[in-house]
Length: 470
Image (cartoon, one colour):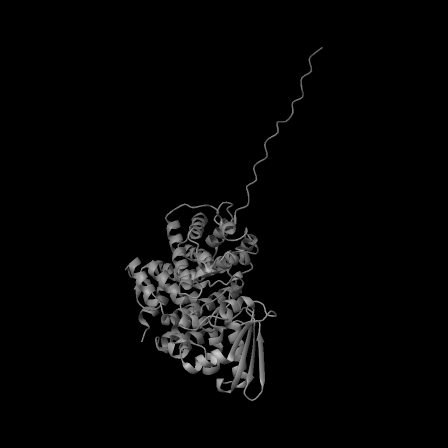
C-alpha cells in the first residue's frame, strides 16, 4: 500500500509587530513641526495677537524693574553682538535678547498667567520667537504661528505635569515647563522637522528647573528668563542635528512626568490637540501685582468706583482669601517694590489711597509712606476664608459713617471668563509706554500687531523698539 503523505500545514507567520503609539514628546513635536497659520482658527489667531500685544506692553512696563541693569550685564557677558533687538531699546545677541526680553516681560509682575498651573507662559515663548524671527526675517504669519505653537505646547505640558502633585514637591512651573514653550516657538521659526523638534523638546526638558524656595525674591522671575534662553538653546542645538532622547516627558527612567510629579497626566498632551486650543485658558493681568491677587483688585475697584470709596472715609477693611493665596500673599512684608507687588494688605491699602494701581504705586515713596504704612498695618485685615477657593476674594469695607460695603469676586478682570479686550490691552500699552514712546509710535505698534498677517518681515516690528524712544 502506498504510504500516505502527510498533509502539509500552512506555516504560520509571526504576527507583524504593532508599533507602539508615539509618546507625548513625539506627538507635540509633530504638532509643532506641521502647524501652519491657516490651520489655526480665526478666534485663536486673534487671541494670540491679544497675548502678543499684552506681552509687549508688559515688557515695556518692565523697564522699571529693579534688576534690569543686572540682567543686562549678564546678557552682555554672554555675547556682545547686535543681531537681536531689546524691547528696552538697543541690540544684543540672540541669547542676550532672549534673556533680557523675558525678564522685561515678567519684571513688574504684569504678564499673563495660566491659573490652573500658576504658570506665566509668555516670557518663555515670545522673546525667543522674536529673536529668531528677527534674525531670519520671518513674516508676521510665521511669528503668529510660532507663538501659537509655543503657548499651546506650554499649557499642555503644564497641565500634563499634574499640578497638585508637581507643586507639592516645590516645583515652579515657569522654570520647569517654560523651556518647552520656547523650544516650540523657536523651532517653528527655524522650520525644524518633527525629528529635530523632538530633539529640541528633549533638550528643553534637560534644562527644566526652578523651585518655590525662591518665592519673594527676584530669582522667581529669573526662572522665566532662563526658561526663555533654555528654549532658544534647545531649538538652535537641535537645528544642528544634535540628538537627544525620543521621549523626555513619559520616559520611565527620568521622564519629567515621573521625576517631577507622580506619573503625570499624559492625556492632557494629546486630547483634542489641534482642535481644542488650551492657550485660550490664559489670563492677562490688568494690574502689576501678584497674579493670584487680581480678583481681589477687581473687587476693590468695583467698590472704589461704585461707591466713591476713599481711604479717609474707611474705618476697617477685611479681605478673605483662599488659604493657598493667603499663604502666598497674606503676610508678606511690603518692604521693597517686589514684595509690595505681592502683598495683599499693601495693595488693598494703596488702591484705597490712590484709587489707582500702576507702577507709581509701588515706588519707595509710596510703600514707605508713613500714612500708607500705618493704614495698612492698623486698618487692613487679611485672613484665610475656608469658603473661598482658587483666587476668589471677598472684600468687606466698613466706612466711618457706618456703612458696610461688600464685594466677592471669583474671577478677575482679564480671566478667560472676563477677558481683556483688544481696546483694554491697547490702554495697558499706552499706560506702559507713556513717557517713553511718543503716542504715534505706540499707535503704530498696536496697529502692526492688529494686522500682523500683513507684516512681511518681523524686523519692521522690532525696529520700533530701536528707534521709537523719545
